[in-house]
Length: 314
Ligand code: SF4
Ligand code: MG
Image (cartoon, rainbow, N blue to C red):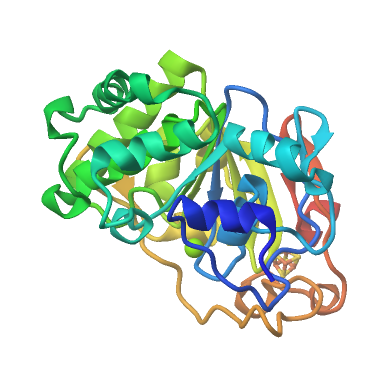
């Protein structure tokens, strides 16, 4: 059974997946207007599910998501659609999230027309302005997605999201499919848009280098739980949680203007049967007896920083 948000996402050509596991468990986080928050974790940690819940593409089975103070999980009908417009999502693979049978002009104008943000007579001007905004040549508005490069297609995806005038953008691995040099251009576009339009971002990535480059604050997730949150500079200078330390430990190499971090060693346990106690204990070099039974709680370790590790109990 599809809820309205999912239907809406499908109409926009967004990818909707079925979820059968509790991918996210007791996550408590707040994002301030204008902030860029990086959400990092290995695949299967629940970061995409969390992003989809925030963007309203997926409804959480429990819990509350407040947008500007309002619980969006209880909104219905028109109010729901309106709130959804304010939070847009950009996906990894523009080819599968863009309708291949629609021209760029239709991809960009479809949602704003549907929601009455523009009228038919505004379309050409609106599409041209939106294409320009994301660095696409407006004279290509009659082309189809396959006639563009990967980086340009991602710009089309960004244009489609911007066309409904959102305040908040959830980027799920939005540059992961692009070459490193193209990644840098698209990341710069995200930062320009933030500056010019005052956007807020939740930037989901498995790539610490990407997140380091553009986030004000970083949230680290492991198997459905937030294990550490810190201002970006603090996190990279002195990671607190052993999982964060492991993520940062692999010798980074420099490529273009950002560091590339290697994946950490060891199997990621199945999110279907996460380890008891601290989920990270089978891979943690500091694991103690209590780690195998007792779930560590997020605790403030310094102003603006929280971490969930029994080592912080002293
Ligand atoms: Fe390691 Fe224990 Fe801390 Fe978990 S709680 S990260 S197992 S030391
Ligand atoms: Mg994912």
